[in-house]
Length: 290
Ligand SMILES: *Cc1c(COP(=O)(O)O)cnc(C)c1O
Image (cartoon, rainbow, N blue to C red; front, side, top):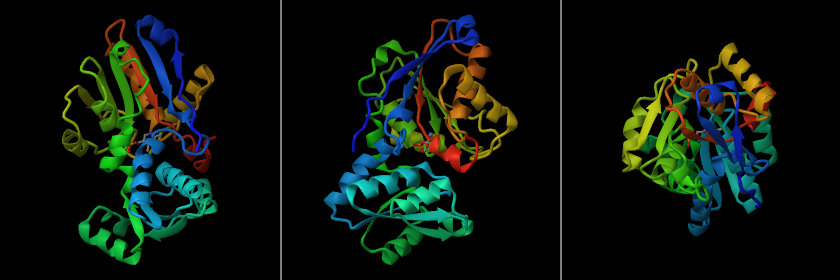
């Protein structure tokens, strides 16, 4: 597969000028037309591992708008490995799931109640016995290999020039990889897309030994996948101002937070902020927001 080197886009407006901060956006959304953003980093070592183990299939979990399953389905097609998606809820097919299906992913829908057990040992064993040839990747690609891949997101970046690095959080795999590959002078800020994401702080402490990070819980807009008119308006204004598409689940919430904190003088003057655009814009098509 061919990947582009993500560019850095500087964004400047009245708010950044008035508060004397600089923002660069790392455009992981430009990495690949289908496998956008952070998902490739979480998949790459998992794909290698499935090949090492001679697995015939790769199975993973996600909601009906899952960027992770979308990326996995495409990667599976490219690698010639069969993929299986276990989908939360009895959803009708949307653009995301249609792509998955067209790229050869076998879709299995399970009830929300059942899906809740997706990390239980017993549940995973029953899935493994149903699909004995499958290499199983957890929801969101969040395992040790996924987090290891995310340590490469910042490669090639001059880290010493940034005071802050901002990143959206779902499972926390991307955030952990960024923390682990940062230098002590970087403050890593993670913006949770979940309403009750406090538990993630304990998990992240297990996944990294660095302490230069802080999680922000104020910009979930009602919870995971939830959105308000204010958020949709922000996303559209951002696109008009800077000609950059954001997704509604993660990156809109993070950038809303970044600008809100700028206006509230959270950042000292002359802060230089690197914002990770983790991609995910494909999901907006399914949500009819594009
Ligand atoms: C999946 C996703 C995330 C969340 O990544 P985690 O590693 O699960 O925290 C963030 N942004 C976008 C656009 C995503 O698709």
